[in-house]
Length: 383
Image 1: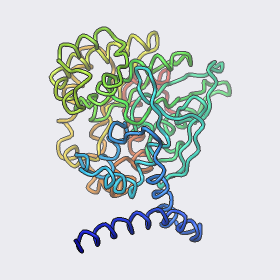
Image 2 (image 1 turned 180 degrees about the vertical axis):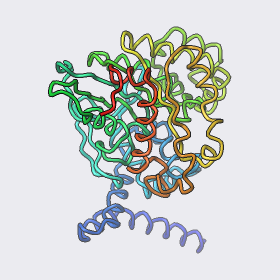
Image 3 (image 1 turned 60 degrees about the vertical axis):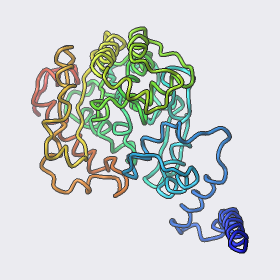
């Protein structure tokens, strides 16, 4: 009995201590980044939004990506504390919102949030980009960038992403005063996967793009669209596309299945689902063309055997006659891949990593006349 009373007392003291910790920490100097971070973390832990389920959140992928784990912790409270110590849970909660349509989630609009990795902003349409008028300015060539957090550039300033660097280089090339201007609109969203891109291309259509640039990561090759389909089915949202509905029906996946069960059931359907997604993307983009970029990874295996990456995707794109530029071996000669990461616990690319991706991409574009014409709309000229 004494041990029981002691345990109860310890638990109560812990709860009271946590409740008092948030206000107490805020009394410390604002310059203390460590205490400021703990203050934010505790505040978010103790003020969870009603009905917000962290285990059905698209943030779960990023929590695993950042902390290097692959399985959800057994204790919900411990999972919140562990994830919040690293930052991504609260960040994803603040920047993402669920949608009641096929895309299922997206960024909140008009954000300006200071994160441990820098300032994150969105425009009035919920894009991680500056404002762009829907009507394309005269003399402008517009490129829409699709992708996930790699292309959105998790942890990197918006003007230092590989997309922003490409836009800058295109506009800095010498030419006449009335030369065409380039805009690259960043439509990439954290957690988006192959099955998202046809619908996202449709959302970008009012901006009248001249090209869709799709940045693919190894997640797409590995068929990581299980969460997207699970989310749609579990929330009774429309799968929207007849071909996708039929493929999911054939797989036997149901709204009562767990995410793991849905992913396992649709895994054998990688080829038809991915084939459909690329074909549907091309249709949604028309008359603008699609150029796919096969992006590198910080995975050590990718450095050792880069040729083994995207094997199925390359074959499929070739069969569908969709042009692509393969820079998946961009990091092959770099020994210290950790130097390209945002932090030791966050394997998204840092500013240097995005610079290298841009360098590899621009080099490939300028050495292939067909690819260069696709991007620039004109022949390549050395100046």
